[in-house]
Amino acid sequence: MIEMIKVSRTYAPNIKALSDISFSIETGEMFFLIGRSGAGKTTLLKLICNMETPSNGLIEVAGYNINTLRGKNLAHLRQKIGVAYQDFKLLSNRTVAENIAIAMEVSYKNPRAIRHRVRDLLEQLQLTDKYDTITSELSRGEQQRVALARSVANSPRLILVDEPTGNLDASTTERVMSLLTRSNKAGATIVIATHDASIYQQGTHRIMELRDGNIHSLTRGGR
Ligand SMILES: Nc1ncnc2c1ncn2[C@@H]1O[C@H](COP(=O)(O)OP(=O)(O)OP(=O)(O)O)[C@@H](O)[C@H]1O
Image (cartoon, rainbow, N blue to C red):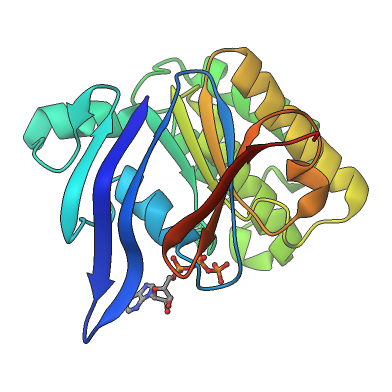
């Protein structure tokens, strides 16, 4: 699903966020990206979804070089990628339901089906009573869950999640991970950047640790 070959990203004037990174993620994997603050996790996620371009190297997503795709082909691939950003990127003057529905308008034409999916996601994330709430009135933990619901809503093939549990208590963290696990079992490839050892130490998923923009280790959980 994802192949990176000798990828670097340098920010001006000379910040090496990532240096010469090569690795691949298989279709259907749940893959954890860990490392200290500033290690390069968010940069890596942004490169995968083409929000950032690499300074060097090749990035293939679902067999396509994401940096040379243009127009309709790029839009088509991006529709298959759901992203929950670290800073959420919600539309602050719209309701919770509207924020989640936006992600589905391309493929779920039927408004009833959209409403049903939104309600189902909100129930799974214990946000049922926030359906009509404007997102700027939510707590950070609630906004985080709305961003997550939006990222999985359209059943994308690839889901990228940046710090999904940073503002959550243990039981809400469990709900978030259950939702991601269900999406993964339904076939989605999932990449999670996190500091939360309680989520990456469960199970036997692969865990890649970044240090100062380099791959420090690539191991499996549960060992
Ligand atoms: N737009 C930017 N301009 C300049 N430097 C940047 C930019 N984005 C990231 N950086 C730098 O690149 C490095 C990697 O940042 P990145 O956000 O990828 O780290 P991270 O591992 O996600 O950190 P955190 O866990 O705090 O979210 C840091 O030194 C950061 O300051």
